[in-house]
Structure formats: structure tokens, C-alpha cells
Image 1 (cartoon, rainbow, N blue to C red):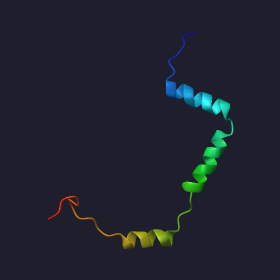
Image 2 (spheres, rainbow, N blue to C red; image 1 turned 90 degrees about the vertical axis):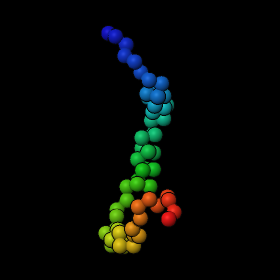
Image 3 (cartoon, one colour; image 1 turned 120 degrees about the vertical axis):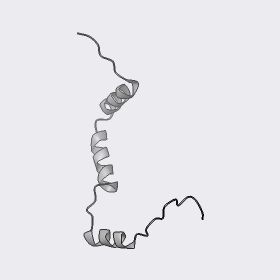
Length: 62
């Protein structure tokens, strides 16, 4: 059987997960803290209504 190429990054990640079997669970918990949130429709509506339209060429003064 031929040996396939494995990048340094892939090898690092594989070894990291082998050394730390709890890491995927920790990743899921961290994601739940910062990203997996229920959105409040009323709050989203207020954010959209309060947005200020951006003018074209905002980086150039007139």
C-alpha cells in the first residue's frame, strides 16, 4: 500500500486530538457560549430599523 502525503498541519491536528480526547467537547462548549445563540426577532428588527445608510465612497471626503 502506498503512503499518502500528510501535511504538517494535518499531522499537528491529528496528534493534538489524539493527545487531548476532550478537545472536541470543549470546542462545542466554547462555540455554544459565543455563537450558537437564539436570536430575538424583536431585537433583530430594532437593529435593522436603527441602521444608518452608508454613503458611497465613505473613505473619501467631499
